[in-house]
Image 1 (spheres, rainbow, N blue to C red):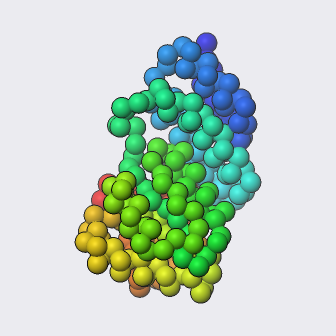
Image 2: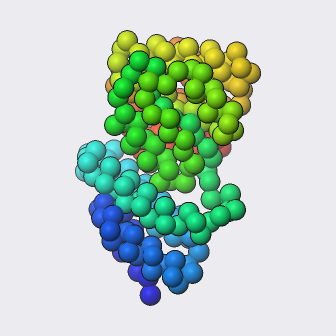
Length: 211
């Protein structure tokens, strides 16, 4: 009998092999993948996120939890073919043109994926054209822009301008983040929201889509 509490603990503590082992047991027993994800895996990611916000967990623990979550999620995906109801929404994420930093952005991507979003991670140094193409191809509802340099953060405004020019602005919610970015900067460039950590990004994404 698969011990799903053990799966929750494995993700919370970042134990990839244990997470995969229990997930494989659950698959062998035909346990509903949505139940596994919603009741155990996502809950573990939310809890590690809360611990991070409270200063009781740090970036390495978050990354390990996200890795364990992804490992388990990859095993469950083939069981959910055609089960579109699982996805909370589609997100395109990337670090803007001229900027090669990606640790924070990858952490946000992992947390979003761990909490049920379908994430298209474009990587770093992404032009407005690439963002627009990815949004159109994937029909994503959210665009997440990251920058770690004061010299590149202004490019976020270029991307928002490109959304307007392509008639996509009303269809896509724009979230921004990164060390030099602030709530007031987000408002100034016309973004829909700002978050300063991965857990807050998940909460923000959910609230933007339910608004």
